[in-house]
Picture 1 (cartoon, helix red, strand yellow):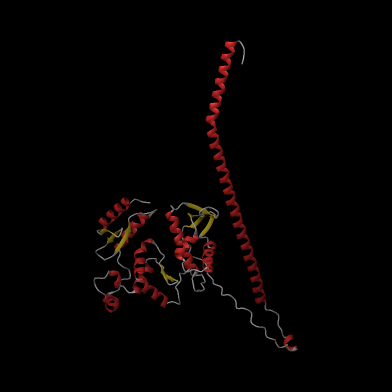
Picture 2 (picture 1 turned 120 degrees about the vertical axis):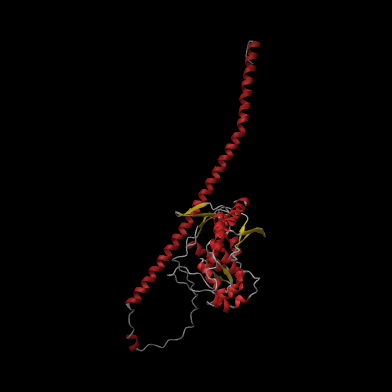
Amino acid sequence: MTSKSDVKKLVEAETERLGFDMKLANGRWEITNAKNGRTGSIPLQAMGRGLDNYKTEIRSLLRDHPAKPSPMVAATDHATEKDDSMPRDTWWSVEALLAAAYSNGLRPYVSGGILHTPGPVEAKPYAEMLHAREAEVVAHLTTTTEGDTVPTIGESAHVTRSPRNVAADAEALWGLLREAAREQGDKPLTNGGVVGVQWCGAVADIIKEVGKDWDAMHEKEVRQYLNRTEHTRCHRPRSTPPVWWVALEWNNGGLTVTKVTPKPGPAPRRAAPAPTPALAAAAAPPSPALTALRAFETTLRGAERRAAAAERERDEALAELENAYNQRDEALDERDQARDELAKLRPLQTQLEQAQAELAAINELFARLTGGAS
């Protein structure tokens, strides 16, 4: 973790160079660009590449709001009639604020009635503005779409709406896991040749933060989504706490999210009228297209079964490997204990050898004095 003095030096140097004002308030450095009214806040300490991110965030205050209303719009926008003493950000309409957020890389969406604002660190000021007016933004997004809004997962993806969006909640959970791994030092860890970071802990504890209203089925779907899209993998499930591999970046392309509606139960049987001989004779064989479709479905089901079996075998192999690692660690511990015991016996061995040498000398002296051996 970077010291507070390093952060202070960075903030002082950047604000002096850019002509900004800085002050310490509420345990953070508050930065103000008096020329355009833009403000930002910097924590007193940084982790990893935090200093570079802080420098970028301070420089971003140079840019004016890209979606600032034109004079004609401002004259007709009721939002501009607010008190002049209010912060400048509150003058913008919700549409203008969202347009600015989108143009700066944010992808705001609503899931479970909660506003999520994933995006680059440079766009953090826009995320803070959105959350400051969360009620207005949530109302705007949910009234302009059908129910909760969901992030796009590639232009070719097919998304079936459900009461909760699995992909959105999976991305939120991955973000918390990624942040937790960053707090542990971002130790590199590979998964099938893919470089990620290591995180030690229980996913259930993280889910308590992001999924307080999830039911058991939705939590299972979210965790399966992260696992099957190669965003998380448990490397040592028997460790205390477990050791996880977490992907460095979120893969937002080429994914398909589907929600299958349970099939209704069988309808009560009704006695079918006996077909007439003419109708029975007219029953046509299935078309070639239908036959090919059924064959494809059979092949697909077989492939799914084989994939599931391969996944189970892989998990069993990982469990056996973890067991072998644990046995090796136990053997190493036993070896170290044996070495410690041997080290404790070495002084006794030295004392025994000294006593034997003294006894031999006494016997030799006694033999010379008495003319014989004792």
